Length: 122
Length: 168
Image (cartoon, rainbow over all chains, first blue to last red; front, side):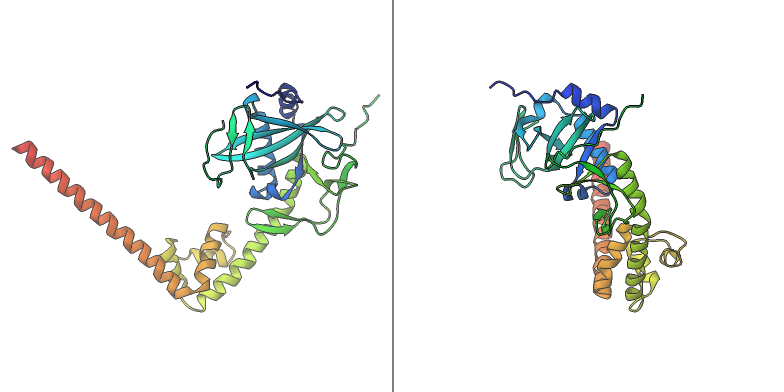
């Protein structure tokens, strides 16, 4: 099967992350980290480590096209949704939370930890 | 000519603009406790859907504002728990069970040391039912000692067997 390609080139995303242009939506999911700085650092680290294999699909938000990735962090599957705003410019992280259901990425299916028959993926 | 700063658009609703907002009533979990963010702390917020956003500076500002509140909450919890425990047993008894150095609990109570969340959670569990919980902990250490003794005896037995085999 042909690998899917993200709408926002990863090179551009990483370029913005490298200069600290990351804007993260503050949701309850971030309360899983002990502090806000720890949450922000985790997001930055995760985005900086994204690869084409972790790309799942693109999705249309009200006015943006967002890219969805599935990544493994310390053995747990995480869902990450981002888009690039070239007006600011910045990477906007719309969602970053533990996977709630299996997610098919270019590298395989990532499953939530408590999901039966966990395996595959990255 | 200076470059005009662009007001970010909200990527959650796609409609509003994200501007710094300071208000009361925002609660965030900080370390182990959910706390109210002081109302003067500005968090970039969408003027349409209310979604909150953060950059590194905002994350740091929130943490800096919450750390003293967190410490204060831990101290209040500590006082409540210690009072409950010491009404039923001695501090030394608890220190021994938890492997703390002598006088540590009173050091924290007197403000000479900061209580940790780990210690408070242990003490909080003990405070629910002091003597039975302390007996459970004593039992745990006793089991640990018995296991270590068993392992040492079996290792000694093995070494003696090897020595006998080498001599034969």
